[in-house]
Image (tube, rainbow, N blue to C red; front, side, top):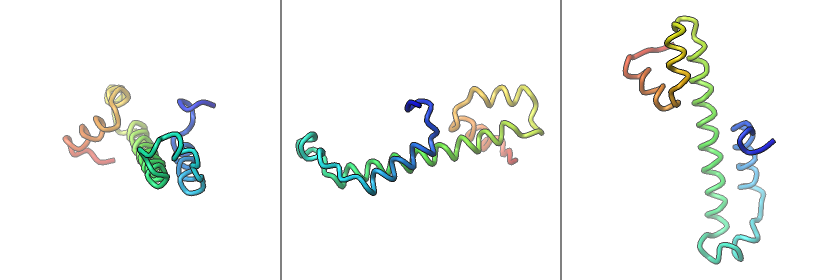
Length: 97
């Protein structure tokens, strides 16, 4: 498995684990004082949160695309939109599941 195929929730969990448990001893040497260990850990936690939110948004988008009340053309349109575009379109038309 590579990074592109790894489920976002699994990657988020790994990042959170690293943020809490890794010592990041090489940070001081490799980053030459440009970042502290705490900053690196905060970065990993933030990446974890962002991936979790993205996974949740994708789950919500997938649920909407499976809505039986949508026409085939509507589902085709939703399939090519980004999650953000899809949410904006749904909000603009005040469509609720």
